[in-house]
Image 1 (cartoon, one colour):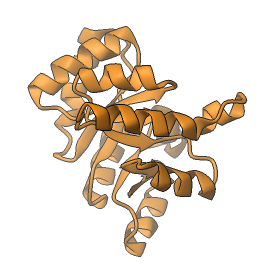
Image 2: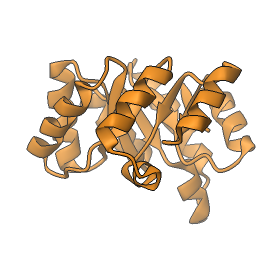
Image 3: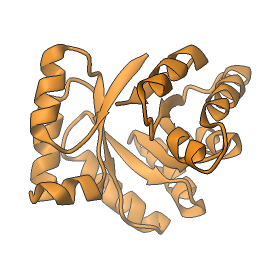
Length: 184
């Protein structure tokens, strides 16, 4: 299973890469804002440091805006993956982005059905938020097992990227459930 670091802190990214355990990274606008840096410049630096995929988030909420923003983000580096929310307009955009060859990470997934829709639209990754489900009294890891079964049943190439991992057991459970990636 691959590990992606969820941060915009360059020191954390460099240190994790030095250990040799990080396969990619994810970030979001709030993490970027905390750095006080210009986003595009920071994104480019993260992409230079990280040896694998780097998920950068769109803020647009309409399909045309998401596609336009995704195209700009994809120009930053070859390892950019564009984070798109699991909303109707997001799915429309994912279908278009897949046709353009732009990799996508459909985020804020809270159900296996949402993951199925994202995979059908050609998402590169789906990011189920297991910790958030646990916080509201559901078993987040059960969703990972269900998504894995669905993806295996229908040979989807979409990878399962477990997000909102809150403790080391989430990482272990992700590996046992057959997730492709877990954020740390």
